[in-house]
Image 1 (cartoon, helix red, strand yellow):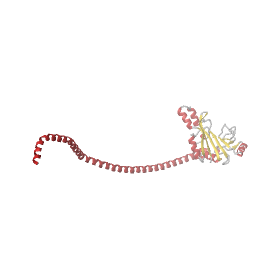
Image 2 (cartoon, helix red, strand yellow):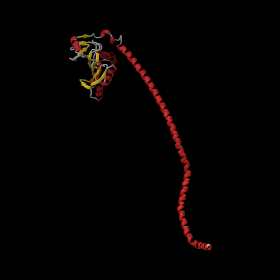
Image 3 (cartoon, rainbow, N blue to C red):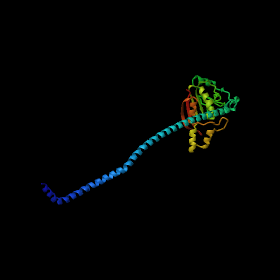
Image 4 (cartoon, helix red, strand yellow):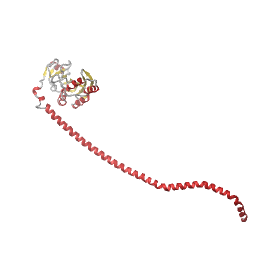
Length: 304
């Protein structure tokens, strides 16, 4: 049997050898690329794994560095905020010091211009109060309708007690507007038209408004009409308001000693001044209203 098998192999070998060779060639053709790919993969892995691991380490290090820098920036930001708060505190101190200096300056200038010994405060120059229409004043007080028209000039109003420092037709009381001959808390309304601008700001704040506030009863009304600086400036800037009219309204016609203007207002600025003087319910009844050469506004307030 073994002999027969050996003979069979010898006979079959020449026949099978070409077939085997072709089969092996086919297998090599298939396996070769796979082997090459595995080699390339191994080579690439060995070559690139250090760079990959290094990159991972770098990312981790970068993350730690970024976190550290973030903490430093947070610390620096807090330091900057602390500096900013400190600077704000210093700025507040400087602002308060400056306000105090300005207050002292205003006090000194006011005393020089209007205090004891000044020409403006000389007793002989004050107008002596006189009531020219005592019956009208008494009737208005009895009816609870004591309404005064301050600085009326030549425009006396029938439903008001008309007050002026000059003895003009229609004037009921001759008096300085900061020395009214009425009991405190007895006046129902204080009205003036184009009067406030004739007084310096400090005189208005210190003498006039406190005097009028005290004269009004609780709930009494303060009403004033003044040139509207905001509207006039807008018109002058736009070229729709003549310069000569603007100049005259701002500085006064200057026809006589009391016809000079010392002040100008906007609705917002006069509202603030009235609130500082103790008035409330401040409202603007009209603004930018044309009246001859002037733009004017009307303001109303109440004594609490």
